Length: 511
Image 1 (cartoon, rainbow, N blue to C red):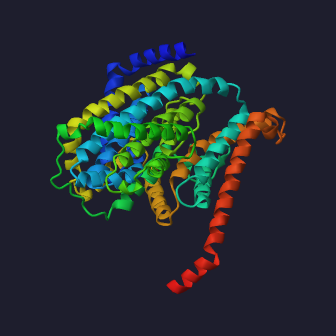
Image 2 (tube, rainbow, N blue to C red):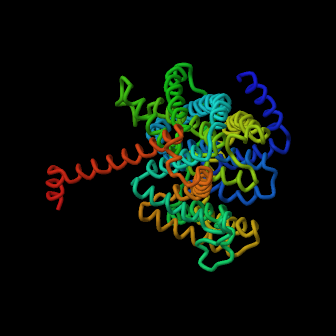
């Protein structure tokens, strides 16, 4: 198996280094790097905006570009967090805690240097895990029937809903909203139009591009439209400032290893984004440190461990998406949707039927991470200057490109209207503290869950017990039920604590 994986990886390098694939991979990491620096943006917004461009592209360069945006944004986000105390991307909020204090002490270059080392090491480990774990998963996945596929996708939906940021109940509600949006259109089995409300334009369903651009493009800009202008000041980082000393490398080595392990562990778990892994990695380093009082004041470990966990998680996220067709987070759901648009079904047969895409993607990870290291050294000062651009210029420009991108997809003004509707809907949900990411997860997985559910019932002549008679299906359903029980127990415990006499007395004193 190892020899076959290495041989396939070598062929993947041949695919990734073809000039047109290499160029699009370079474009992806460059755009992702820039997107990571800009406040209010993120990989979801960037991939949503560029998704219409992939319609006219070959599947290989299209997926390489989207993947490059994803992990490129992880690099860019660290720059604003360390130099300007700007968590431009949620996973880097933890990096601000010790990254910016290091900058105020004149060690910002060192923090960036350690971040690049941690990122490249963690990404490499994540890639190696993906090389050897994906074929193993595929060999197991070939034993999956409709019942098992339904159960594991249902588990992904439950995990994505219950583990969303904020209230678990709100996360489940948004997942159900995504399921409802996913079934809009013509039923492929009966030919009946469902939930179209008399609009012929909805007969083919809600377009993924319109939904993604509305929820993550327009909504993000509406959230930040009143943000004050951020100035980068006179911040300068020289090349020699980014070379950490041998003592600093030794100090950061074990935190990097531990952070990489945490990111790899959580990578294959659906619903756990990189933000969760960074907080866990930071908390672990502070817990085991002999001098925890240094954290928050410029501890090198507080930068190295979270960044390593974020990058290893980003790479390993592709394992369940590509091998099983189950997106681990909203960005993966969007990339999964891009594959489906290209007529490619992610899952166990992807490696055999589309080996050029799978192994070319893995090889492009290494190439892209090398490009990011080479790009960040000379361009950090440029990225800092980009932060001086007033948001009042970025906002209308982005909306213009969103409208043009959606219209160019099917030459439909109705889809532009959809983007506006979903953008306003997303802004309302965000204002009410409802997470919008589970909507995309439910939209992508919902039709597949329905399809495998109906197929399993057809093959079993309508016996609902087929889902617990198959051992693997029963295990997945059991884990999903355990997740629901755990979240219900946690919510009940929190409610009891809030109603405890001590809290009630403190509330009365507050009034």
